Length: 295
Image: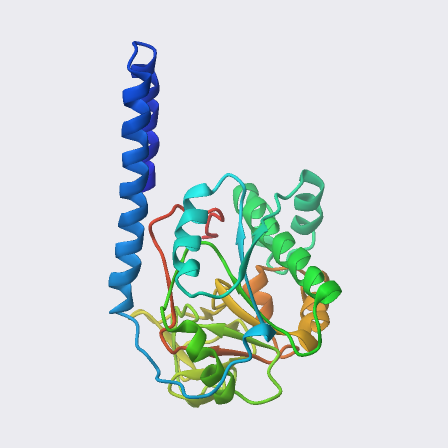
């Protein structure tokens, strides 16, 4: 919301420049930029009180953890949002340039969608294919330049991050089986997952493995307060931890048709994906989505 107001203010200010007062406008712009940056920092610090500190005592090999966030060139507000937070973690991170889907790529995916009804939604496909392309290119980069001991934590650019994220990562890893390929932090859930749900084996109250992205209402899950014929579960891909040895496996799933949203494709028996809901990441709703939701 702050950035949308800033955009409108700058447009109005450009009109004033034509009438003179360029120096004054520059000073106002600098002050406004500082205020926006401080607002973001204060909001992040206040959110710190909403996150739970796990008190993890396990060590983390800092050199083995590589943090990336994916960001479109035009989304400078999201870039500022992420880097304000990541700077506070005092750990090296890298911005990965998000890809824009071409018409031919959109056409190729649309003709090979797992859910055929999604194939004609151009606005949705444009964003969805761009997200897939960005993640595939990033994982190929990891394969090429990474090492066997490396871990890769990938963020989308619209999340709030716990100030205690880094110290919590070793405890997150220790809580899941050693055969994990990917770990997603604080998965989005439209359905209430129950312990007798064979599609989502629950290890404990906060950890479960995702196997299929569709299950049926009744014994397995409830979606809201209304009984439905089925429930969807993809989980989101806004904070995902990858093990180096699993990168090729994930790429094979993503690049093999039929296609779906990249987070839905992590919800498969082919990949040992675990959702760990420790309250380390929250989705930010301060930005308009770059991937229109399919309805």
